[in-house]
Structure formats: structure tokens, C-alpha cells
Length: 167
Image: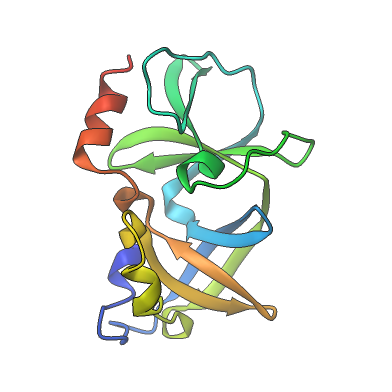
């Protein structure tokens, strides 16, 4: 079950399935990713910096013998940097078959929703800039809008090749 299959471009959903999203905070906004993409959520470890990597690549970590690239979501989205605190987490996700860590301000909760509750993002937002294709929908959650992302579509093929060359 993939989040990108839940929202069509014409504004309709394929089926009214119950889906689960892991919600997280980033610069006072709430985002969600499909729970099946999340492998684990960890506290901030020591991150080893890597030379000649894109600015949003924070570095790498060793997680139980596996080397995992770590991405700063704030830098990836062009947001202001923020000091890490006790709520800062790394979400380890399966991105196109490879484990990747994403630094977020806080992890909120697991949300269960029906796919019919997901609205497509406004076309103005989608045409507003490059790299917006990973936003698959918006959900009204407790009087706040939760932005639903498909992490498989967050990086271009070229960026994936850069990650593959890091190790």
C-alpha cells in the first residue's frame, strides 16, 4: 500500500482504505509518511560528516552495522536551521529500497485515517516550485493541516546515485 496510489491527480481516491501515517513536526508544520516506510525512530546520534555531499546531507551514521545517510529535512525544504533538542529525532525510512535517515524536529503520533479523507494538494502549490511532486495530499487533522509525503519521490535519480556513491 503506497501513499502515492491513494491520491489521484483528478482529486479522487482509488479506494477508501484505512491507512496509517507517522506524523512529525518540522518548523511548526505537521507532515505525515506512510507507516510502512518507517523502519525505526531514533534519538540523535553522533553524525559523521561527509565531504562533497549536497548541502541537505547531514552525514552518515552506523546503525547496527549498516551505514545510513542522514538528511536534514529543514535544509532539504529550504527552512531555517534549528538547534537540535530533546525532541529532535531521526526517522529511518525505506526510500526506493535503501535505508535513509531524516532529521525532524519531533515525531508526533501514528494516525489512522481513511484514504477518502485525503485531499489532493492545491494545484497552485504543486506548480509553485521544483521538487513538490513528493507531496501527495493534505489531511485536516485536529484543525491543522497535515502534509502527506511520499519519500520515494523526494529525490531525483541523480540524487539517489549520489547517495549510492557515498559508501
